[in-house]
Length: 246
Image 1 (cartoon, rainbow, N blue to C red):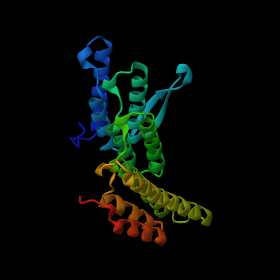
Image 2 (cartoon, rainbow, N blue to C red):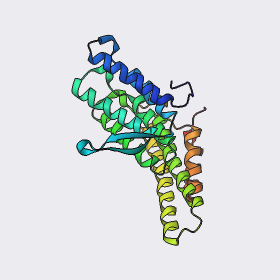
Image 3 (cartoon, rainbow, N blue to C red):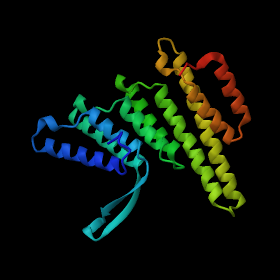
């Protein structure tokens, strides 16, 4: 389903995952979903970022409430479930890995919302925490940082779209949006600087070396924020030979 490009493919993948979980709960050991299966479902959500509708029964059982969720939020909920199950069962077969976290970060990058960057940062912090606690399967790399940078770039695009949709926006709102764009662009630069520092540490391999795509995303974000000094800093950093051939 993740690669089908079919409408609603992510929901179908989630239904299949729920069916596997149901079979496992009934005693079919071979139906137990693994990290690979969970990651495939996360990937389906990342490639299908459109809004879906979730109906929930209200407190007391009276009536239903309707809540809109984008696929990135649903992917994050699935990651929450993975973490909870692993913490409870300590079964390495369902342990979230770098693919799990990077896929959810990428889902936020594809969601097209103003909160994409903030949400991606939350997932990145969770992954880094696990790595610092000794989980080598959550070791960060350039792909993860690039996805987080892309998420902040998405936030900038979404904020600019709001600007275009509001013809008679007051000055205070304009200033607020400009500050949001500048903050997102600065976060892009900070993530790139952090990645470069990690790559330069003794013993680190090429998986931490930023690519030309990483630099171009940051340069584009700073350009949209009209941070020309930031553009100069990134250009200088790139000329130092930090990129690798794609």
